[in-house]
Image (cartoon, rainbow, N blue to C red; front, side):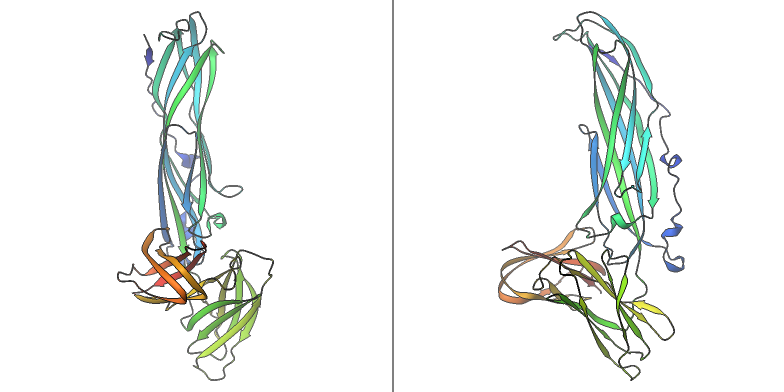
Length: 403
């Protein structure tokens, strides 16, 4: 007869905050104590085979604002069943000790989200098992189910935000390890112990972000155009103040900006409309993305910024497109920087990577498209993603929807 033993573990509920106290979210606030805006992602994973699990979240798009902190809230449950079998031709008595460990680790080195928890060791047995019998069942015992971890909580906030910033179509990866250690106390090396483990993990990642410094309401049509080894930075200003000073700032990560040039107001008439151009010479051996913004300092010393624009140096100067108008309500025009031939696929994507609108179009030696959003999404920041189906080239541009 096969032996079954069921054990109940009580009181083995760990408050992870005892290891990582919950940090105040006050530091996540924006200037003036204004609460930061949250973006929430959730995953739910259940595994009966793997001890190592990976789960992913979209990265935060640093061009829409300043990421102030990242919060991870998760719970996990583990249920175990042990199978012990006597492997020798005589009766044996077996006793063993077992405990479970859980390790969660997020991105970064060192990781801001790293948590290690172990269950208390428990002694199982003694169990007297008959001689090894490949047909019968007197030589084995099943123990469980046990629950060493039951909805163990973790709630941690990190201010090391750099690993989480990037293209929201890319991901940040968390690694989760949940495994057991078995020590035979009697009958060592004469029995096999197999473990069936079920792990249920629920995790929520929250990005808290603030807008960049207040946008200058007098700025219009801030654009970037690549010409060979230079990037033309152009912007228009309405209601110009003749004492304004403009600085062109660049960044390689969308967060840390440095000034590369300065232009004083070139217009003597107060309240005039003004147009400015700046040529930025970049290193042609460099790759990746360059982020641009314009810093305006007024006569009162008040600083304002334009929205951030991105130039991908890995794309050729002929690729890419511009959107007009932007922000858009319903009707928009796309102007490509080269003539296209063949079919293209157009997706409107939100910050979570969900496709809200899909359209296909055949291009015949053309570089412009007119689109109509018959049912525009709520006001906010989205991405227009266009793929040339002939060569697989992918273009992405930020789109602002305003009702």
